[in-house]
Image (cartoon, rainbow, N blue to C red):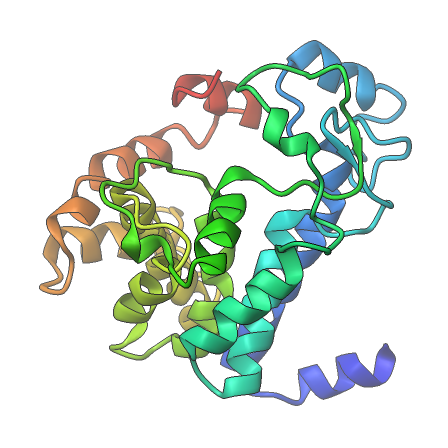
Length: 275
């Protein structure tokens, strides 16, 4: 590990931040996995009651839907890894290689081939939960069904599934194309293999811009102490010519979040509409 860290420190700052972004996303996913999808505050408080300051890598887990060993990735992390492996192998994006690898990771005969998730009803805990093994959410189940027919999400009309795993997948895309004029087009091209929902494409386009700013600039602060990268993102969404109208619609929400940065995560979550 020391040798690996020494090699990382020898890289240019932008490459250091790019690697840190990806590794941080993977570690964060694994750390949060034992508390994944805990939707009730009383359950969460009980789960972390032994030491509320250390909720990461919780043992025993409180995840009500599935059980995998502590330190394992959730399906979000495995989607990040699958895309990164394909991009590295192909030295860019190859849709066939990526879709084949995604199917090989999540399709029939894999650890993810578990019938439990098909019984999921939003907000409900089925009597057979938690399932023993990883959880394959609906967007990846749909992808596998489409892939078996030689199709992708591009063959779906009016996709209305705004599943958030699209955000996890873009980390690898930004690492590959940060600073390139191709970034936004690559984000849409790659995300659209699994999801073409307008909400997903809008949100990931904006998220990719923010991740890119952190990779290129590092941590920055404005003169009044505000987060410089977030402030820059707002300016880009308001003035840049390559921003589509759907991305611009998120500007007021981002500014509202900035103005409420004093809130705890719990209170912010409630304020911005997640129940």
